[in-house]
Amino acid sequence: MSTPPEVSPDYLRRELDSLRRIGGFGMFLLLIFQFWGQWRVVGVLAAVLLVVGISNTLVVQWVWRRVGYPWAETVRLGVSALSFLILGPLVKWSVLLWIYVPFNMLWFEGEGRWERLRALAYLVFVDAVALLGGCDPLLPVAFTVLAAIAFQVADRRTALHQIMLRRVLVQQEQLQKAHERALEQEKLSSLGMMAAGVAHEINNPMSFVTSNVSSLYKELQRQPGLPGPLQEYVTEVLPETLDGIRRVNAIVSDLRRFSRGDAEIPTEYDLNEEARAALRIAHGQLGHCKVEADLGELSKVVGRPRQIAQVLVNLLVNAGQATGPGGRVQLTTRQEGDQVRMEVRDTGSGMSPEVLSRLFQPFFTTKPLGMGTGLGLAVVHGIVTAHGGRVAVRSKPGEGSCFTVYLPLQPPAEKAVSSGA
Image (cartoon, rainbow, N blue to C red):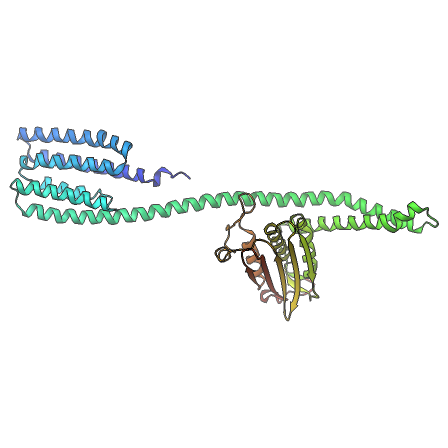
């Protein structure tokens, strides 16, 4: 993703470069005022100011665009060093000229060996020129110390800018991903509403079909001496048809209940019935593999049955997607004391320890783009935890996976809920 200009490194450098040029221009003006009346000195200062300004505005910027910022800084420092060589003897090593040395150090991006070598070379050159030109040694020493401090300030400032810039970029990436995931969730929500609407529309004609076929079956049963073909309808065709109709009605009922968006009141429910409904809903994702259901004798469970069905659907769909053709997915329910255990086992590809460590993180997914949002298992963990339960996972690459959900018969927060809630 592209970096917005307000946080890009080039934008920050241009802002600092503008401040640097304004500061350098101000120091040159102070030198001109100091030597006002000495027109030869003022003329040379003005000429140097013009050359430095043109260099920083045109030459340095051209080098920056062509070969990068480090080389542009090298050119700028070279021009600054040459101007110091010219102006030092002219202004008798004025303190105002020396102030420009630590001022120059403030603009270094002091990360990397090349930056430090360049700063050291600049200071050595300036000090050598001053000492060879007869400058009082105290001035080079004092301002070199100030320049070293300024360089350290620049070094810390650059490190801080880099840290803040990285954080801002990470936050922008996270916001972008969150926005994309929010759009995906909106699509999923719309699909859920559409599924509920379709189920509602199917329910009406199916009620007529159910009623009419049932009436026909009962009427034919009451008729004595039916011919052979009609007798076959009574004994085989119509019972199988009614069984198929009941299955369609059960799927429609499951979809309507599963897609409802209103808050669910905790109540007593049959966990095995929710398991059968989850198997019917997830049937399309399990058609390529063998499905085994081993549902044990269970007491009534207190909780939110629609949410538990969602847990089972998510686990079954994940198992189906992880299992290749001819594989096996097994759903088991058992009661263990005051809790129930649901187990979804598959013979799929399994998971590595790295994937297992991040399994329940929201938006983490190993599925291809468009196959998942990384929310399914996070939702499973949240629902089970809210019911006072826990999720255990066993998996190895190439050996399949086993998700085990433990739920109390009556969650601590729901103990006041009666069977008629």
